[in-house]
Every structure is written in structure tokens, then in C-alpha cells.
Image 1 (cartoon, one colour):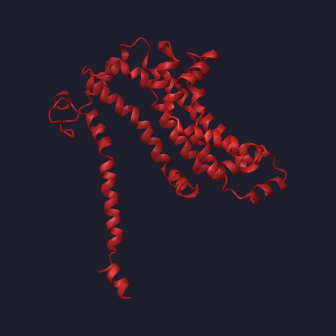
Image 2: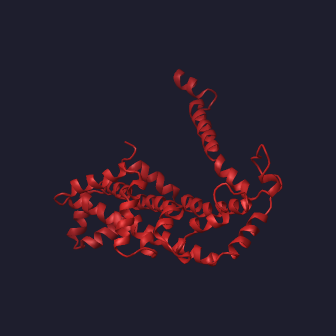
Image 3: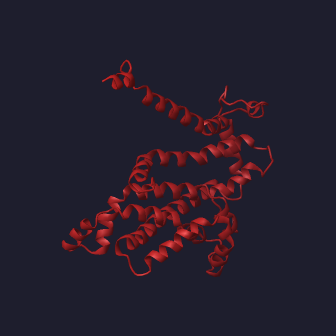
Amino acid sequence: MAVEARRYGRGIDFGRAGIILFLTLLAAFMSLPLVFMVNQAFKPVEELFLFPPRFFVRHPTLRNFQELLISTNTMLVPFTRYLFNSVLVTTASVALTVLSASLAAYAIAKHRAPGSALLFTLVISALMFAPHVTQIPRYMIVNSLGLIDTYWALILPALAAPYGLFLMKQFIEQVPDALLEAARADGASEWRIFWSVIMPTARPAWATLTILTFIATWNDFFTPLIFTQSEVMKTLPLALITVYGGPGQVARYGASQAATFLMTVPTIAIFILMQRRVIQTMIYSGIKS
């Protein structure tokens, strides 16, 4: 009783309150770049070039977004074409990555075909290589397939995601075999088991994979740079370089800040919608160990 009394004091758990306070301060500190980016998008020109820079905007304006609209209207290709390319490539990449990673993980985790363990080890070993190391082989493969300057050149390389296979396998392994055997006893096919048992059970894992793939594809600048040649095949990140005016340029600086804000909004929105699934994945997939 004495210990409990010391722990809770006057009814307050000071240890728990301290942890909450520390985590709140840490979260506030980590959100500072995001807050700064939002403020930059609404700053007038005279505040953007202040030295020392001002963190919060004092006189918010939409002028930067108007400049962005004007600058995109002068491009050779309509801005909607870049937006369409980004939405198409991102949607297709997310859907195909989740499907291929889930199918491969189900085969490895629950069917355990001969050589599957070795295959999984080889795939996971790809995590040791920096993405830029594999760009030349990827370009040679895409070029040999005749896919340069096509949507498939932007979608297919994204499907080779070792972290996706690892994430899905870790989660699917925890699905009880008895559940699958019961489905088979009821006459369900393997395809039906995959769609009706595995995918609903692994919803937190593929929701997490959806977020990771969406962020990586939506913000990807390098892949469209090397796999596209025509202006009509560019995606938003590559097209916005035209707005920025290149490294070290100050022209259209306000418009570039507005473009950065608009590029980040979809990423934040999808993370907010699916953040609960991400936490569930971290708890149940075994990554915590």
C-alpha cells in the first residue's frame, strides 16, 4: 500500500505522466519540419527571404498558389497530365505491389515449397543493397524489354520490393494453420482461401505496405527521370523541377513551396487514414523483436 501511495501520490501516476509528456514533446519536435513547410507555403515573398528566417507566417497569403498555377499553365504539357501520370503510376504500383507481395508471402509462409527458404533469403538479401546500386541493371532490363518511356517502365521496377515480401511473410506466418485446414475441409480453393482468409486477416500488414509503397512512388523523382524521355510521360515530382527552376534558383521560390505543400498533402492524408493499421502491424507482425 505504501508503494502504491508513493507511486500514485495524490492520485496521479507521475511516471506515466512523465512518459506522456516526454513523448508529446518528442512528437512536437519531430513535427517541426512539417509545420515549417506548411508555413512556408503561405508566406508572402517578403517573409520568405527574411534573414534570420521566421518560423511561423505572420501575414498568410495564397499568392504562392496563384504563382504555381500561373507557372504550370506555361508548361508544354497541361498540369493535369502530370497529375494523371502520378495518380495512375502510384495506384497501379500500390495495387500490384500489395498483390504480388501477398501472393509470394502466402506461398512461402504456408506452402513451404522446396527451395522457398533459400528464395526468401535471396530476396531479403537485396535489402542490403542501396537502391541506386541496382539502377543500372534495372535500366538495362527495362531497356531490353522495350519499355522505356512507357507506364510499365515506371510501374514494374517498383514491384521488386523485398521489404514488402518480408512484411507480408512475417504477418501471414502468424495466421493459424488450423484456420486454413478448416477452409480446405469446407471445399475452399487456394485462391478462395487467399482472398477470404489470408487477406482479411493480414489487413494491417497490407495497409502498412500500401502506405510505404504510396509514399515511395508518389515522391519518386529518380525513376521517371531515367525511364521517361517525352514530356507527356513525366510525373509530378519531375515536372515540378520546372517550377523550382533548378538547384540554387530563387525564382518562383514561393510557388515551389506551395508545390511542396501540395505534394505532401496526399501522403499525410493516407497515413492519417491508415495509421491505426500500421500500429497493429508493428504489434503483431513480430517486427518488434
